[in-house]
Length: 161
Ligand SMILES: [Ca+2]
Image (cartoon, rainbow, N blue to C red; front, side):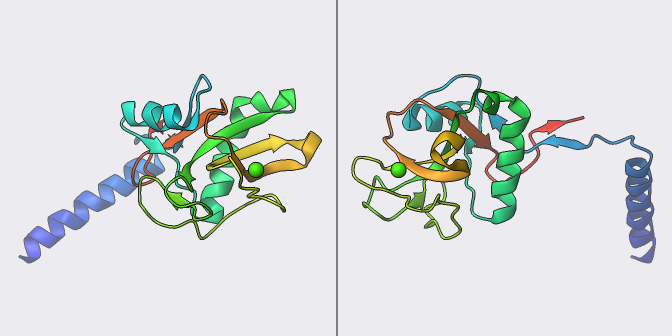
């Protein structure tokens, strides 16, 4: 038994050593941003086709990570950039739920005054400074055409250096 534990510890030490030497791949990507726009349902389907899901952004850290991934595309340079996130209130109006987990939206980064409701039932992230959206959340009509933010189902790495 002691011998087995010793072998496991040696193996772990080798792995740590390899990482320190840069021998093992480093995670470079948690989120995938679509190359084209689509409505909210198309975006759900797009992520699913990749074996991913529309992003569940249930913590401030994940929100910041999504914003960081979006910024690397450079698409915000036009002054307008909208991305679908994985929640809606389509099942019950005014109750936002993360589509792929069934969990209610608790952490939120709504722009003050949002969600406005009406015919707007799908959650998106906007960079649209002309109307005071600075990487903040909005409810939009689900047929609006925006980019998708996809992630793995456990917020795992999907791209390596
Ligand atoms: Ca709205």
